[in-house]
Length: 179
Image (cartoon, rainbow, N blue to C red; front, top):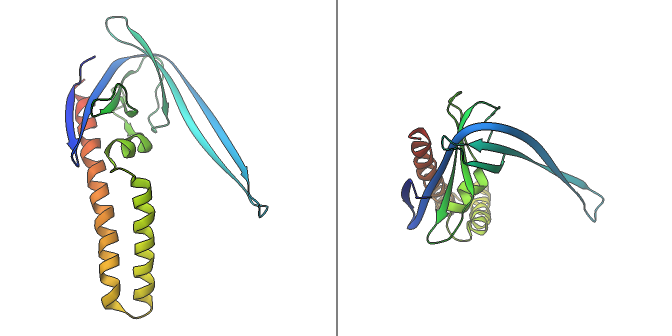
């Protein structure tokens, strides 16, 4: 399958692919993880998935399992799924689901972040949150001058990261709507 578009996000080359077809079947599932901590606290996390079976105009069928993108689909709908492949890799994550009949489009946040985020972006987020907290405490302590740099650096980092995400989502939406 040939790429429908290429986008450069922060120096990373991402090839965009899509598959458009009629929904033959759609199933939802959930997976819950429960963790017991040493202090007696129990936490849970639930992931929702959609498995969508699509058939294109030539009769080719695919099954796509995606984390819930918030786009309802039902048999008979025309749906486009998109994915991105970073650099010269062989495969990449599904990022976008577009229901042509309802006009709903949804992005899978983790996949978008994995594709367009810088290397070690999760660690960078933690570092800049800590820097921002230090700046906030400095501001609360009355030291306005020493709080400006950490707060500005944190705000700048998150603005930069959001811009990268926005570029990829816009390219995905454009590719979906041209299907």
